[in-house]
Image (cartoon, rainbow, N blue to C red):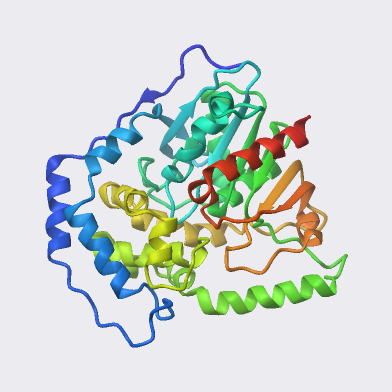
Length: 397
C-alpha cells in the first residue's frame, strides 16, 4: 500500500547558534508597552504580567536545543510537489508508520497560530495505541506543515485551502502511495480537510473535524430557530474577537514588519489567541494560561515561527483563503465523505447545532467533549487521541 522507499528527503531541524544568540539578544532589548488598568482578563489583549514572565523565560530559561532534539525524535521529510499552476512547494511532514498491520493512513492538518508541533503529543498514541494500553484502530500518521508555515516553503503567491488540499492529495497518493486515506483537522486544517473531502471524495475513507468551516447555502431550507440564535451569537463573538482576522485578511504586510522583527511582538500577537481559544481558567492573569500551555510548549510553537521566519507567510493564508472562496458550498453541494465532528466547549464559541453540521457534511458522529479547547491535541492529548480512535472505529467499522 506504500512505496518501499519514500520519494522524499529525510529532514532534520537545526537552528544555528547565531540565530539562537540573536533571539536572546532581541529579547534582552524588549521595550514593554504601558497597560491600561483592568486588563487582568486580557480585555485589551495580551496581559502585561504574563508577557513579562513569558519573555523572561524565553530569554533566560527556554532551551531550544532540548526542544529541537525532541522534535527530531519524530521521523521528518520534505517533498517537492508542484501545484496546478506549475509552482513548486517544499512540504515538510512528520511520518510515523504504525507497528500494527492494517493501519489507517491519517493525514492531520494544523491551523493558525499553530504549527505541526500541535499534534506531536498524539502521534505515537495514534500510531502505536497498544503502547498506551489502548485498543485500535491504529494509524499511519502524517502531519504536514501548512504551506508557508514552519519548515514548509513560503509561496511566492499565497494559496488557499482548496489549492493546499490538492497538494495534500498528491502527498498522500503520489509520494506516500496510499489509494485511500483518512483525514483529521481543526482551524485552517479543517478548511483543507473539508476541501479534500469535496475534491477527492473517492480517496477519502472518512474525516474527523474539530471545527466546521463550510458555509452551506440555506435558500432551499431556511435556518431553524436554534440555528438562527446560534448564528446571532457567533456574529456577536466575532465582532469582539475578529480584529486579528480583519488585519491578516486585508493588510498582512502592515503587521508583518513588527511580528517578523520582534520576538516580543510575535509572542504578544500569538499568545492572545491561545488565551482566547484554549480551555483556560481565566480567574488569574497568567496562572491558568501557564497551566494549560506550559512555557516550553507554547514557546516551541513561537520559536518555530521565529526561526523559520514564517509569521507573514502564515498570516497571509487569511487573505488567500477568502479570495479562493473555498468555504462556500454551492446550492445542493455537500461533503459526502463520512464525517465525525467533536466540539470542544471551552473554545469560547457557542455550541454548534447538530442540524447545522448536517447541512454541509455527511455527519455520522457528533460529540460534545467534556474539556479541552481549540488546540485539543496539545491541551488534552489522551482525550483527543481516544476520541479520534473511537470516531474512526465508528465510521469505518
